[in-house]
Length: 112
Length: 115
Image (cartoon, rainbow over all chains, first blue to last red; front, side):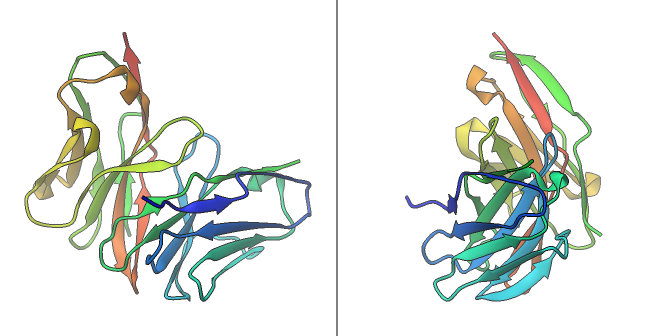
């Protein structure tokens, strides 16, 4: 069965640079979520989209933005990167109403 | 506000022994409850979920969990642990926002399995 696809899997950036993470949800899933997991931490909800509209916002810094496109894929844009942004970034998708979120393998971002 | 507590940071069990991982939640309405497992450097895999109905839910890999409203708990159990179960386990509570069910995770319990 198709799973959530995230790209790239690994990304190394320098401070103050920008990064774009991509997420391709499971086919027919209309809801996308972004989570950030720091080293040894639990995943923290950043933002979610339903039917291409922002649904909810969590602890997402103002330097980050995200959107969901017409084909339901989503991109997380991160600017002015800081060392503390180094983390695993997970995308998850769900089919509205079912409540089950299926997670992608994550993108490991390292900021040097 | 939603919150999830996993009191045990690290648990060590012998292979073949039974397992119970604790999870307590705080939520104003009927929660959606989940258990996820994460192997090192990997993504999160859904083990099981509770939305409504039967309070004892069965999941994958032989896991089960029981929802106890009176105790605000959703403990994960397995009768006989296998070495491959060693991983990080996260309990999560979901609430329904417009079209989305956002998750709040507990801090996780790391399971070590001794041969």
